[in-house]
Image (tube, rainbow, N blue to C red; front, side, top):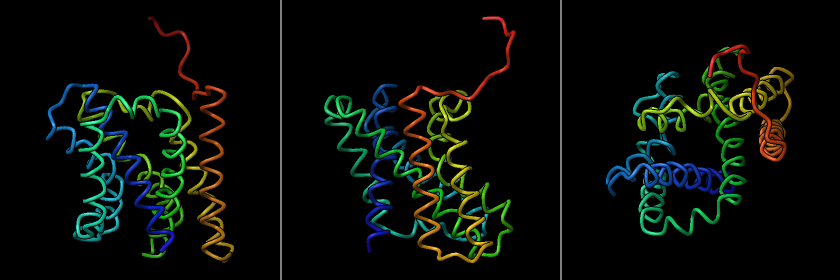
Length: 203
């Protein structure tokens, strides 16, 4: 029950980030809700497609759709208040990332994916929705050009895969993996870390 509640919180936070981006792009209410759904559920849909799970879990579990859609609608009406809660949203976003990556990696391993594939699928579960959001807004995905985001996700996924290989308790491994992701993400935000880019580029 606790895991479901945490997943719904993660979905709400990701939906809020998508809706805020849509409001800033001046999309109408339908566009805001679509972007909220895409950001919140996109990573899970990609995961299930890669693993051959049809239809995707997030599309046949109505609470996920409801939470994402309602969150998008709430942000549409009260977006000034959400702008003021930016730090809190970033904290919850880090928690959501940790939960989604570890659950995605665990799901992939349980369905027989090899460890390296499970790590990539787990990372994609966490960052996929945000990447789709940016593509719909005609932007280069944020995770590919700024901040330590995808790297944090991959580190946590690797920890989960190693824990599975060592036959450690799945709950403990998921907790450690999520904690590592959240810690790296928050330190990166605090220290304003960015992954290096190629030097000597014009502009």
